[in-house]
Image 1 (tube, rainbow, N blue to C red):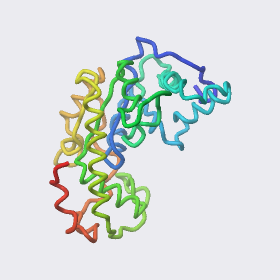
Image 2 (image 1 turned 120 degrees about the horizontal axis):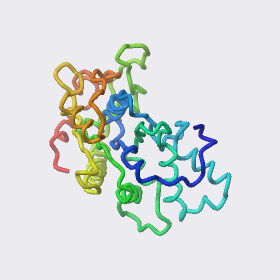
Image 3 (image 1 turned 90 degrees about the vertical axis):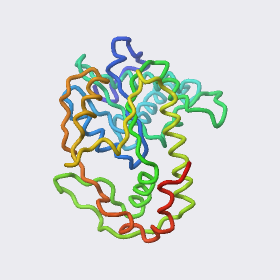
Image 4 (image 1 turned 180 degrees about the vertical axis):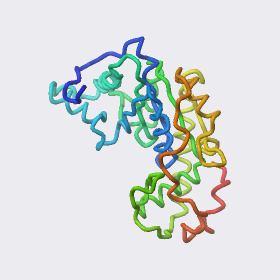
Length: 269
């Protein structure tokens, strides 16, 4: 179904609850390579980062359509209903597929309540919990995910296909600000803890990036088996990653002031 043809205000049917899976994690936490592995399953349909404005299936394009049809939909009291309607619209029409929706920590506050108090947990998490939708949460050691993001922002080096089919900007060492690294680590920890504490284990499957790969660099069979059980599908995931690590050398070779920040790896947050 094309974006413009979506029915307004769809409702998530009870029989579709198991066919919607939210995939959550931080930017530069291995989420793209992991999501591609999930989407390698014949039943999984990757809807991408749903709050990325470049995503043709994204939430904000859907929201724009609803507001165009009814300008009153711009008011915040309609946000929850529109978000759930959007999620329902992404359910595959083949009655077998599973919709995979990627949400980054940084986007958790983009759906809000009209009378939400500041500094409270994101309403989006409460919506997902009440709707009994499944969540796969990929966690990564905050020191490495923050540094990976800061290096990527400065160099423009993000994702590299495993087949070397596309080139990235040349590698170059960069400097990072210690205070920024530490504050970013603390924020990511709060976000990760909030996601984990918002859902019971039966609704959420949390995985640590550091334990996802085997010695050959492929996805661990045990990880794929856990995912298959959680999603209620056969284990048919492609275990060879579609992307290579962009930073495959010691951080000291990439960050010019690494000695100033190395102790943050073990810092108590």
